[in-house]
Image (cartoon, rainbow, N blue to C red; front, top):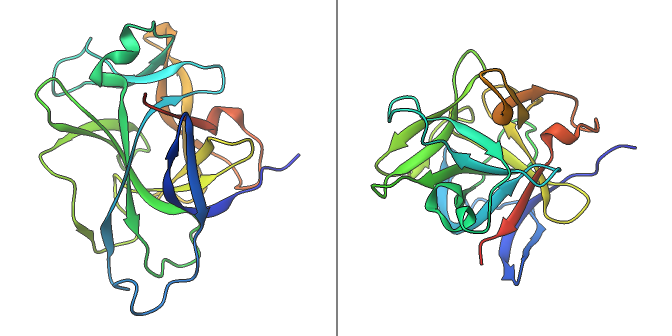
Length: 205
């Protein structure tokens, strides 16, 4: 069975649910066609795998090599800032057939700085400290930019790398610690079912 996906824009939250609407075609007056402009819409959520494990910024590494990892968290751990992610959306411009809402995924570290999920040229996902997120992105391909589309069921999304079309954020076992998963890119067709690329967003309460 194929997944259905729709370009979306965030409307708001109610309880544990996010509300989106389909993205209408933009007019010249709506956007700058030559850049992605940062939006006022920013989600605060727990990022989960389909088996209910939670994405967090690992503190087992030094500041230069912190990793995004996935594991079961206790109720107490869910209150820590290292698992409360922000999904920052950007306004769209013409982008050569790419589906989804331009987004960046980041978390605040202990010092209150932004730690952003980025993709390197070897297709590895790594964390990068940014004092501030870019206000405008001039190119359609950026290390920290992913195209978010909503899947079925509700609150499930996929994040396609802007650098590598048809490669999506997902989860895979961490070779250094089999009890953990880590954030990776998976290659797949857009309509292919792959639960390892299904990202569940839950509103932080």
